[in-house]
Image (cartoon, rainbow, N blue to C red; front, side, top):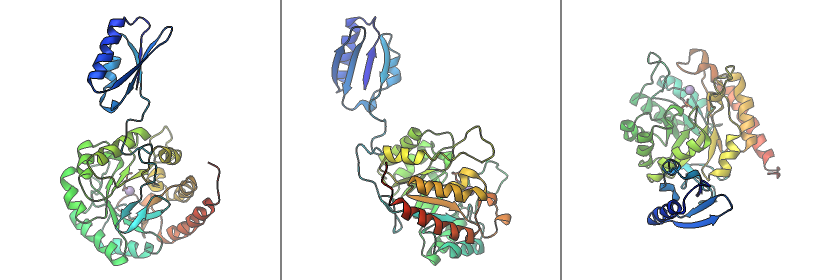
Length: 338
Ligand code: PEP
Ligand code: MN
């Protein structure tokens, strides 16, 4: 971290600031230029409040050299992390296809979909605690849904992933699922992040619709700092001025995250676009961008789905898409330009 003093800063204030930083256990390197005096801080600068420093009358600005996230940073952990989700590996060259209905509606529905996709997806998804925009919309089957999703996963040999919305439900949901999903709307629900950070189950962390890449990584840091390092990041579209699609898929988030972090990165093209006709092109783009997996909504009767039918693929379309995605994935291995 570098503190840039104002040209008018009296020597007495520079000395005082240097002492304050040294008292915090940091080493301070002073560079005196013609106009500006710089204080280069070396050590645990994460605990330094840059706002407080910038409030100082003689400080011009404070520049962070390191990223504020550590455990999630590739700088501290160059090798890619491989997350094991109930026996399915994600990351470090292992690409995982996750699919299933937006919401678990009843036993017949989830069983039908699970059987239809089991040869094309490795992980079964399904919401049982649903974060709906309207309190009057279907909110999910809760524990009964967890039981049905588990049953469908076991019957088809697929691990399962489902969303948890509140800290009180973490133990209940973790008791059924192989991966806990933190939804976009909860990406900065810090008590929830800390709570799943104390669970022993991997976490699928979705990017908030107005969150920057750094915000997403800081949320991963919350989870990891509590001990749970099995975190998968998911780009699921962000809010922009565009209204034709539900959100805007930020494809650049994939290689950007891969530069910044060792954690696996997946894409959810379904919530990104909101229209089933756009899911395939976005999924192809995500694989070409180098994702570690995809999570896609599939429903055998989208016109009767209790949530997100318009963005759900029918199983035969999903199957055909996965076959194409595997071809793109294969082709990607021959590309060398970075
Ligand atoms: C979901 O995956 O069902 C979901 C609600 O996603 P998001 O949190 O990305 O909106
Ligand atoms: Mn959905």
